[in-house]
Image 1: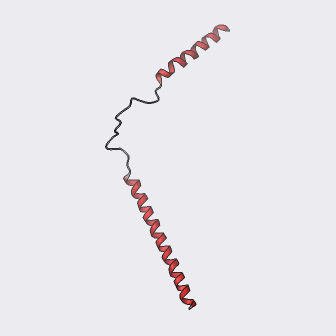
Image 2: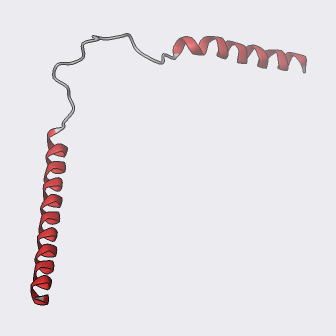
Length: 79
């Protein structure tokens, strides 16, 4: 029984000592200036967001005009 415990302990100790040398959290540091031509496609999503914002703004303006028209019609009927 003691031999089995010793082998298990040595195996776990070897794994604990050798494993960190195989794992790396980060690679070597690259160019700190960054890539002048980023590979991030911002055109498609950005244009969709702009179009959605413009549509929402137009809807709000249209709703406000209808509301003002209804208020003006109601005020003119009271006189």
